[in-house]
Length: 507
Picture 1: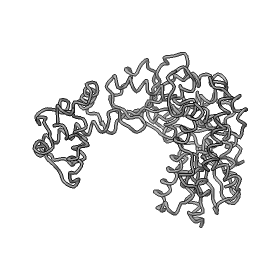
Picture 2: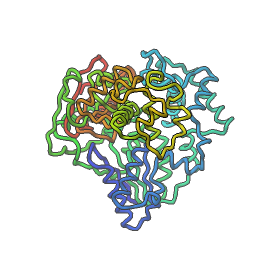
Picture 3: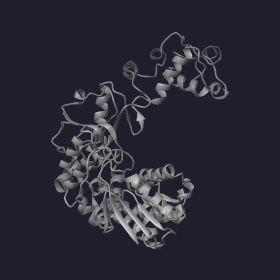
Picture 4: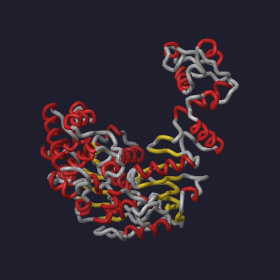
């Protein structure tokens, strides 16, 4: 048996190394459909599959075991979507026991609300975390702390949850992993690759141990210094003890020298880490500290602002908007796509370019009925819905047949009355500056969401939540890892904002 752990510091090419090792397996005569490459997240699993497909011209249909552990367990169990617990099921349970699911508590001082989740969601996270770490509910409650929650209430919710699953013959994603482990059947594979292995929970490692039974080649790729999924039960010790042979990828192709130095200051604070020597790329880069966003030169280049929580990220996103900067958040531009398309299409329409019915309906959606249209000709009107989608219609046709009253000589910010004044000014300033509205240069993200990503210029917000600060005082290594990941996303420059509260991480 050939087993190896590959330790990959930031930007050292873990995914490419995996791809190369998989190529070696194929060249040795192992069929692609007998190679498994599994991961905790869809993103990591997809990147591994796409890289192999691209590098070695392999049809992804020949890679049936390139998937998440949950997907493998789902397929192995022969489940359907109707078998799986859904948010709708949780709300039914929550309503029955008087515990809300899927709604945010208005009291921002509560710890569970600082995470942006409901009390029911917080209880269920605690329950699933206990199962992932193979702990009893009582043990998990004691470890986690009270946080304004009550064990009796937790126990009542979990009992209702179990009863509901039993009554409707439902399972959850943790059940899938548990049943895979109990079945104890290893797929017919000759090589096993586990990507981002530092993020696997104790329960998921039990599944991996089932998968390890047959393969002659076993490779575990990750970085204990980037293990930031402890809130989901990540078992770093299991990762570090997976194999005796360890290989360190020691050349980063992302992190410049000055940022590397900052990263070393952080990573050396982590207790119990595997020591590893790695080198930055040749460029020196830049590290700066700023009092506010206004001090950062955002006028050019690619930027990503990263914060510890969604709440903190939202605060800084609001400040970016106040300063007139266009950004994206969770893949969505700060200027609503539909509104932007409506204004562009109105301008084109007025200049003589005909529009499709779907574009016309979108333009109409941002016009005030009565001021702009004869009543009955709104975006959902029967007339508009019956237009031929294969045809294009000029603005004269709309005036004659579709109730359009607006003069085609006026600009979009006058015609589209449902776009509020603040948004209109926001769009106008962005257009004057020449910003790419549909694909902004600036991104706003949580640190966890950017894991595995990178940007030329990184802005790190050092403020942390009440809950994170309390955990920081008990176990600093978790926050060390989080902010190590944050600073090492930078390809050119790192910009650190001065904290605004006394709950912060010192970078």
